Amino acid sequence: MKLLLINGANLNMLGVREPEKYGKETLEDIEAEMISESKNLGCELDVWQSNIEGEIVEKIQHALGVYDGILINAGGYTHTSVVIRDAISAVNIPTVEIHMTNIYKREEFRHTSLLSGVCVATIAGFGKQSYLLALKGLIAYLRR
Image (cartoon, rainbow, N blue to C red; front, side, top):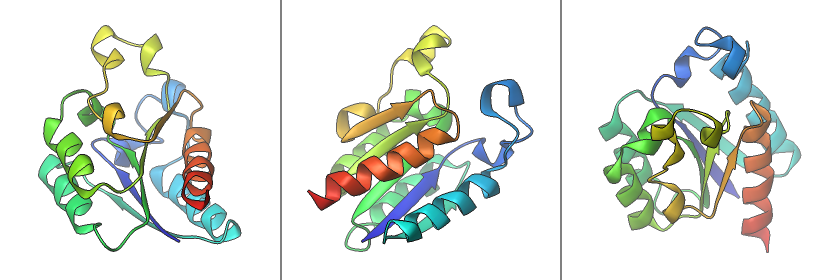
């Protein structure tokens, strides 16, 4: 099983950006833990990050026929990007949306996800553990 983890805008700033909300671990720390855990679970995981909406769309499009599942933390694009939603819908690859914070306890504009309607699940509010829960959930979904 081959999976892709996509991280969107500003996630390259983890460890620096609002550590009281997002923790002190860097994106590289989280990615390394995710790769290790995916191997333990018998899967291959590729990781990728971009701050650019169009690059994220292209990465999703190029995942077709390559990956069995996608994990995505689109960052702020979660609340604004119809084109990322459309790309997920177009490739029809099971996708899990990830949020480190509980978006429903934050600003009102963050309460709406444009992506969740085309994802098999959304995991939110568990900090870096949201990534690990999403990984385990997606693998279980794909194996059933």
